[in-house]
Length: 489
Image (tube, rainbow, N blue to C red; front, top):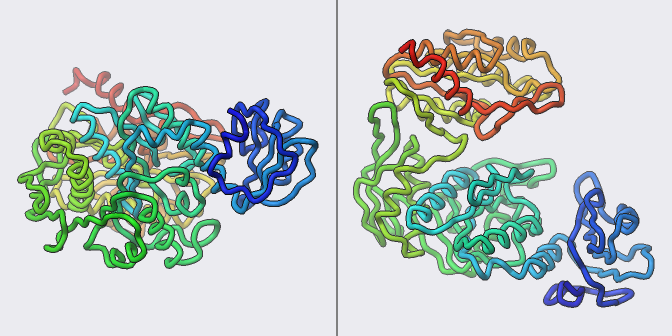
């Protein structure tokens, strides 16, 4: 693409050495520079891309975008106010503005972004259309799961993935719009068709994230200045403040009788070894006895958010019902098929707060026994181990303490730290250091009506030991163990 076309409609303050150079790629990491690219100087907490412009030129860059004048040879140097914001603009241009060919749905909120994204994706796919996803689990389209470093990747990656989706005939993409992603302009370069707000609570404060809760909320509100329609959880106390300066049409959901989309008669449901929640959705839609195939009353909120989106998209109710009943969120209370009358779930819970949420949720289903299998990550604060051990001891009937990404630590040292916490309680536990052996123990000793939670790994498919990520997917492990034990039951 010619440089002039690449920077069209991008706010450039000054251009030095203007030449209409042919640009073959956009790069913002000097280690990944390709020949004939434009190098965009981004500044981070621990680095400044301006310091690496010369290295980028040596590696083949033919144009530079920067926030200040720097010494470069006779090549185009574009000075801009904010390189992250302009990276989004030139990335959209480079990939042909793919958002124009997709219905784009962005979801922000402290909790529920991943679950709501998967619910919307499931409903759309049950309507017969293709829906891509960009978020915590990665970028998903077709059978591809491309892992990401951040919940919301850099704008270049977003535009590239949207281009691939559009080329493959996708009509929809749903993505998690993190507050950091909104703050750092990763979601610039296009407007969302629909923006969703799930809820707001304390998180991401300090360090490189947000200075305080006020800024955290302000960053989330940015979504509703860059979408055509906004869907807001009216039950959340910040709802009015969040939308104060919004520029989109606002729709609301919640238990509040003034909401556009309402829910009532929420109830837990358990059948055989599957657990979920059901609710009636009323208001702008009318769906009675809706079954949601993930546990917890709070998931009724996530489901109602998804229903609100899909009603605005005019997706038929049978697709909504099928999509919610069959939804699976990888690593988030993800059910695993087992042959007997107990239930097994994989969840990413890897700290005390998430452990408490998961165990409390499943405790409400009155299991005959609630078992949690977990470890704690190595080279992380020890207090996390104590707290996880204490939480498990208080809320589970049985804890199976094992290994989880020991990294450069001895797994047994980590287990001893967990035991310090669990020994503050009267909770029963057993130690089995090998994770596969621990899972086999849980399956062999399962009883009818039991709920077993494999906590900590979630969507991860590896075990990190001494700097090496060894392949380890708990879904595959369970399947292998069940095959091995099938004649024993």
